[in-house]
Image 1: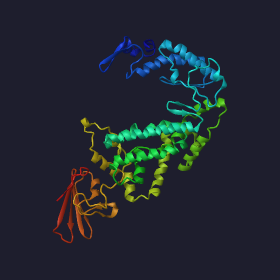
Image 2: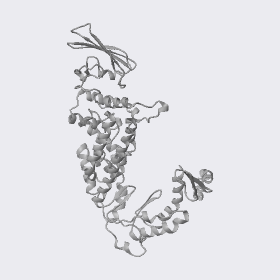
Image 3: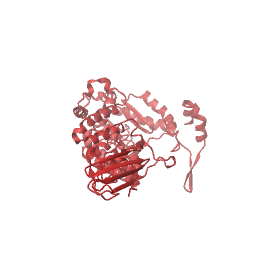
Image 4: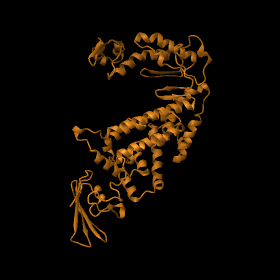
Length: 471
């Protein structure tokens, strides 16, 4: 190990020698043990040092055998080739690996053929105890199989585990942290690799259960499981940041472009891998995914080859897909002018930056749960108060005015969007005269009953605090 570091990374050699030239004592509670071999778990240089030790063996295999594929991700290796050649590769790993401290774990090694080669049963081709799964194997979590049931079972297990993880996140009872985790390391992020490697049709049976759990999680985060989170809010919440929403994606959207982007990005590599078997066409699964995408978006994806070769192809296809969703949303959901205006106002630059901020109390980057619920509700166009219920401040009923303004005798919800400007604006109806004044966060709203001009009611409140007071 130290020799490979000196050869390839001399600038790091002294530090690595200081860390690993002698055994280190590891502590576990009241116990301790000595570490004599290999890199220590948690060492930031550990993956690099391991890769340097593995590299000579990888190069030896490359130079000695004619393989279709040899790919390694640290200690996870994939070798594709003729049956007898793959058997010789295993022999080389078991013979030369221990000299560098690398030992093949036969118990975790699998050999697979879509149609088993009779030569695989010849003596000495592969270890007798090696696993030979009949229907498929997983490579870095992705299925390799010609059996649809194998891939469907893998997807079902992964979706079930993801749903369980989302349920655990709900126990945090902090909507801001829940949304960050939901977007970054749970929910769809747990399924991206499967979505890129499995046919979209395989997700059909599990899509509903995943989206139902995701919608329930978002409803809890936005409204604390209260009213107002309808189909339009669900559609808005699963748009990306640049479309002014929460950046949490649903399976039903991602499966339209993830698999297609993966196949297009690695089409040349797949052709090289499959051509020796006489497989030259992309196959019906790819053709079906391409046709579905083109029919929905109204595009011809393969008409312009330069578009397919573009970097970040998955992002490009996602932009094409969501652009179509946006153009059809107005007609699908029958949006009002106010809903469209609110949506467009939140697509401006940096309007979603606050959603990406990690809560850090020491830096003042925190927001209480009630305020966060209110801000997200406003962002998704959910009224903070129900028209059918009395005002929580004065117990009078609400009226719905033109332009979607909802007000009672003393409370104007539209005032929440005033910002920090201080001004007075009267609102007049046949029976009321209404105005409000905002100074900082404090909003004062008053009403004059036109039938009795001497009656004046004033309501003062700070938005999002629940501290309304009627005078």
